[in-house]
Amino acid sequence: MIPEESRFEEDPVELVPDPPGLPADWSVDSPDPADRAEVERLTTLLRAHERHGRGWAGASVDDVLVEVSERGLRTRQNVVVRDADGLIRAWGSVHDRAGGRMLFVHVVERDLPARTADACSDVLVEWAVGQARAVGEARGLEVQQIDTGAFEGDERQARWLTEGGFAKVRTWWQMSRPVTAEEASLVPDPALWERKGVRFRQVRRAGGGMPDDEDLRDVHDVLEEAFLDHFNSWEETFDEFLHRLREDPGHRWDHWWLAELLDGADDGAAPQAVGALVGTVSESADGPDGSYVSYIGVREAARGRGVAKGLLRTIIADAAGRDRDRVGLEVDADSSTGADGLYTSMGWVTTYVTESWHRDVPVAPADEA
Image: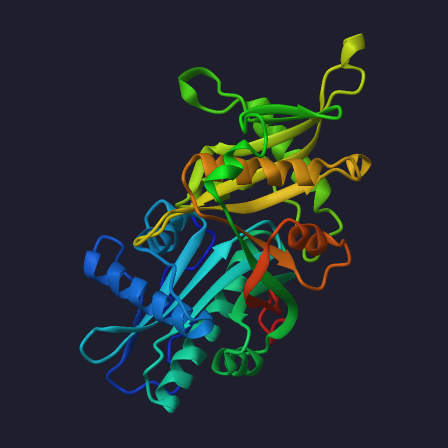
């Protein structure tokens, strides 16, 4: 369930009382989400991190606010390292995800001297380990996983994570597909269409324009079942699922689709939800926006009936109808499901590669274990 209050330790000094290796006049504290200059500084650091790692920056102020805003702090906590003038030079953020998994953002200014940069990284890792113990204890766990990432080829980040006790566990292809205006007719209507006994439709709207609760639960149930055997899958409650996806700056309810089997409909049987796709908007500051496939899943019993392909064709047509120029997605490069074959056959190509790095933290401190 979503907690009423954060499970994290709010005071960084409790976790990093004597910051290792920092210059004497540097400090560790929390960022102020109400200070626009600080939010913009964090955005600058994050964009520089992205630019170095993959050649271009995509993060916006809204992406940073997801991490540091008051609303976000129900499931997140942040730390910053400041120089003698109070300027933020490093930033860490942790996200309390489904039980047993904690996401960790680790960003250090690119232009710092090597020794100072190393010290900043050490602070972020020490703080994250302390937060892992705090959230793990609050959840009643014996071990808390920290899940962080790096761009492939970022040797500095990989070295820091290795020295911090993390291990590289997975590689991900970040793929994109161009969209043309003519592809708006790829399906009859992205809101509702049928093919070979499968109906594809947007989630229904209830009163006030909000989505139908039953549809949302179908999306959650399909994705939970579809990803049950996937790498690092953690059971996520319906409330956790909705809360997390609604935090995405690109979230739109009209980018959620269900696929339903119509077998037996002529005899009065209710359609069966067997596939789901959750899409988002990828906004651009200097060109057309894009669409993004945050999640796509098909129940095992319905695989081989063109459900995944139909859902992908739907979001492509929807993107074209909105004058967007691309659809992006992420695929597990180490998976044996063959999903990458479907994506490449439909025009997706890999634009950059990311890595998952994990560290399992015993919840009890070493001297108490």
